[in-house]
Image (cartoon, rainbow, N blue to C red; front, side, top):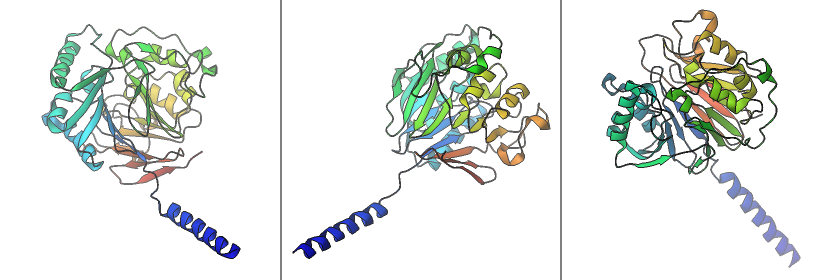
Length: 342
């Protein structure tokens, strides 16, 4: 009898082991950095299949940016976009909304509330946005809020000029880089009202601060670093030197940074150098070769999605696993660079 029970136990353990080995591996989180020629359109797909689009690129151009977003969505197997988050109401971020809703179903729009910039062009773009989202679910977020996307944590760090005041878990250390950081000027534009988000999947952390400018970035970093460190950093404001203070970028210690610059927009030499020199940086990638910079302030061609000004709009795709490992694929070359877990 005892021998029979041991055999049964052994078979049970064997069955459990076989079932465990046959179980499908957890799906990765996907991030598509869609090229919208110096605007932003970042598509995030959670392992559960839910989707978040951060910004929509420019209007016009015969629907170019909306078409590129739809191409990424179809590549990801999406039939709809569950959330569209508008960081702020500048044309290169919100302008593509009317064309986007004509091309794909959108669940909920997320923003920081009404336009806060005294500018005729921004008022015009905000009015077009309001008209386009009529009839859709709409949420106004505040710092500290989370979006209900299954499988990942999407936490709002800044919105409408406000920011989190309590450090995130494992953050809050005094920032030694703040002492040498020059004071930053006030900014009355929508840039300073950008929604910034930290997206976490297990041990993987991705930061997107929209177009926040230096004073607001420094409020998140000084005197204490409220964010902590990140694996992947979408360089703020396309790499403009109005943003990306050293005290923020260096405190983040990003492993990999991506510039969503245009051929003649963003990736300024000053911001590029700060990112390039960041402690612990492993790689820098650019959506475009920065034509108004020099060779010493552009990465090698194999780290650029579009090397010519008149391009096909190639993009980057990132796949990230919960253990903190991730890989980036250059849509122009098809090559993949892997970054193992730490």
